[in-house]
Amino acid sequence: MLAYWNFNKGIRKIEQWEPGCWIQVTCPVEDDVKYLLEDLRIPDYFIEDISDADERARYDYDEGWLMIILRIPHLKTITSRSPYTTIPLGILIKDDKIITICNQETKMMLDFINHQMRRAEGFIDATDLVFRLFLSTSVWYLKYLKQVNGLIEKAKRHLDHNIDNRDLTSLSRLQDSLTYFATSIRGNETLLSKLKFRLPVDDLDAELIEDVNIEMNQAREMTQIYANILESTMDTYANLINNNMNRVMRLLTSLNMIIMLPTLVASLFGMNLVNGMEQSSWGFLIAIIISVIITVIGWYYFKKRQWL
Image 1: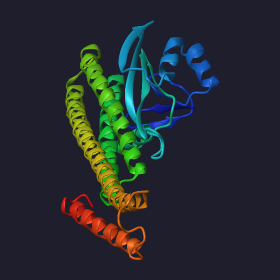
Image 2: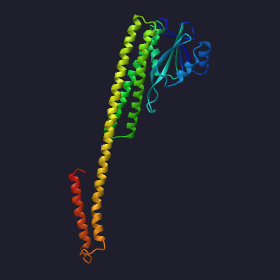
Image 3: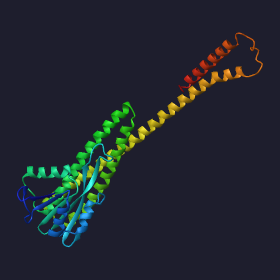
């Protein structure tokens, strides 16, 4: 899907391309790709790079195009294997052409456009657009990190009452998401540190870059904090599971030993040995009494040792 945005003194949607407008490409179909390659003449390999979900954050120059790949946060579904992940956002700049390409529709880009409409100021130039995308990316990392923290606390409350595999699995999935976040944020920070020396930066851009650095540092630190909390939580519940399993095994072993005692008495009296009670009418009752006494003694012993 193609969208054209004029960002001079505010941002508004236009019907067709005009010099200096922003071309937003979301979930490109075959006709969109053909337009990008044949009409705008962007490098064909860049389309393939953007389609690779694992493409790292970087920039490159080729045929007059400045090509930037930014890793942005994306929420798939809470029930998916890794609910929070990161995807590449491609930015291409050449003369009066500014293009962004993303293979998935994200809340971040929708919010970015709505926010710029509310600002009613637009962008000064392509450099301003690039750094504002960086800022929006950092802000959305922080938003998703707060949601991740909420999911961690919710799972912990459930696990405090009952250790369930479903909650442990959800924590493991969030751990994967935090790993994706940490890697992408570091890549974006490295990319930003390089771009601020490659793009024409004025005083306003310098202030914007400072804001981006602050937000990125906060996002990186929060990711590290939540990752440490999650790792500590997983270790704690793993130890609880092992401890509970040891208690169950100890209980079963103790019960097995207690049950074995009357079995031993019955086996001894049932052997073909002379024990003086072969002809006694009290023999069976005596065997039962001895079994009960030995069982009670065994139960008391294990109870005292807190094995029951």
